[in-house]
Length: 334
Image 1: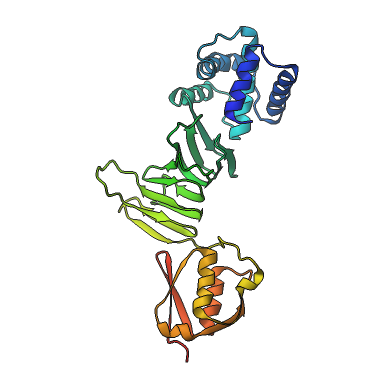
Image 2: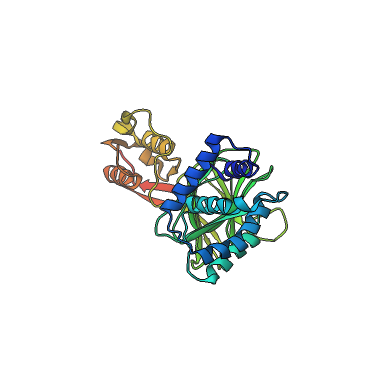
């Protein structure tokens, strides 16, 4: 159940319009979530949280309703369990500072969900549009409860992997402090830690547009288009965007059969064309005499760099990565 569905069900429950099955589902779900969380409240802490938290829950979810007292703590418990279940976070301390910081976060982000991953494990988040985010440790992300009709904006600090649900009419836009990454539907990783000198964007599938988050006006922006197995590194000091390939390229277009990577006296141009199709990486042969070379080997189930090492060794050539392109050079074959 996502945030929107939960809000509607809770509103229905507080209006007294739930069916017996829906009411039982709310109670069972709430009890189970609280049972497996680490949240423990004394009566005084319960009252303190109720005083500060309930008003904000009511104004955020039900701005035009006055909720009767007998429903208040049930709603708070359900809302608290929802936060624990979705966010996987635990900030509980037996001090009033905990309550203060928690309520200030709600005040400053009315209508906005903020997830902070303080654990040592990655945390999976599913958005209402079907997109998925894997938030890495020591990272945070914020996004609206409901996206508007024009775009889907999210704001990242740290590192996250995104698998975006395709929607050409509503671009998915990830904001970091220095860069903006805009996509229609793809999967990619962004690393943008405050204490790092650089930002990285790495594309797994699809295409993304990455450009500098600048207030400069004009038609020219400092940016690039990235395709699968490509990445950029943005230097925060020099403001330079440096494109390159990811460290370990993966196959994007899976060959129809294993025979596609088995070569028998195959011309080098055909070998490189098959690698290009599979990895979506550009290859350039600098010496045309190499086109006379043929290659025989089974390249299945080994990584790209190992494949290139075998190819080049067999034809007495070398390869070099320059930006997002791999150049092959050598004396050629007779």
